[in-house]
Length: 273
Image (tube, rainbow, N blue to C red):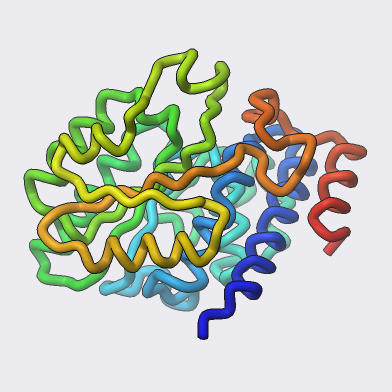
């Protein structure tokens, strides 16, 4: 029997780390990091074939954070999994420290691709999936995109190529929280119907609640069972999930919490570690 509660508790621990590191850094992106915590928890603690003691294992599965500004959630997961000490989290964005404002594949164990320019991580993940096919490896590639990221042309070039090459070892996940830096997606640049667009490009589409552990697991299982085409999981999420005053508030896209705000957030998440 799958221990959903353990995964939920792990996601909560990661959310606490996000708040702590962003408060300490004084800058960063809490909203889209908190919204993705459950998805990354399932990937790293249930789904992917990885080894923190051997980050470059040849036949490992790979994860690419295409929405690179949400680096805090990736760092929180990597530290929780044991890729590096948790103490490094409190050095986020500090000069000379390991953890930069966006993921750096050369300086951080477990980071597969340096990302930040939206759309490029998705493109790189497609290349990784194609390489695995050419090398006849059974490893899988997962990538997380923001919903606002779908406004980038490179996303649709990649979607077309991945379907053309039948990359059924590639799973894209859309962190669909409805908000981006300038406001609601539909006011900035409408992206709907997301699922129908990917179907038209030749993808298999699954929809799920991005905060429901069981639904995320089932969606990933369906992706693995789909042959001959890549899969996209449209995961409905809440920006700022887990912290009431951040939830569905676009102002928390790129603002770090001050001390009182961080203290209140941590109390909501279950108190200090």
